[in-house]
Amino acid sequence: MAGMQWLNGRHEAAVSQPIVYRRGKNSVNLKATVGNVNMNLAPDFGGTQLRTTDKDFILNDPTKLVICGEQTVPKVGDLIEIVENGNTSRYGVRPPSEGEPEYSWDDMRTSLRIHTKFLKVTNGCPT
Image 1 (cartoon, rainbow, N blue to C red):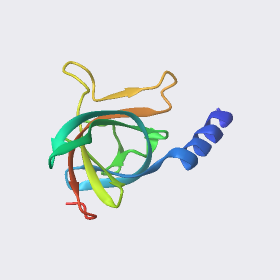
Image 2: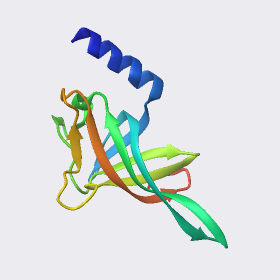
Image 3: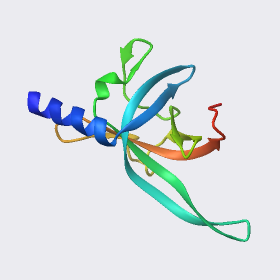
């Protein structure tokens, strides 16, 4: 177990990035690794642009997901904000498709994958 904790710490330091997890008026700052990313091409200003539609965030230490003093799991309606290219992108916790859960555990239940849908970008300031 000590080896897994050491590896998780090294992994988090090397590839994770800060996120803000929000539920209503409550929030917690965490580190997450970006997992699966779905994109599509959309027309934009006479050309096309690649846009993110879905993104998975992986918490390597899900015990840090604490809202109002209690450890919790993601639920639909929660938000994740992440700074990308100087702007704050907001993602809503949603199942990847109807009938599927909005989160999943790895086989050892040591990391938590949160499925989200892109909502909007704010210019440097979360709203």
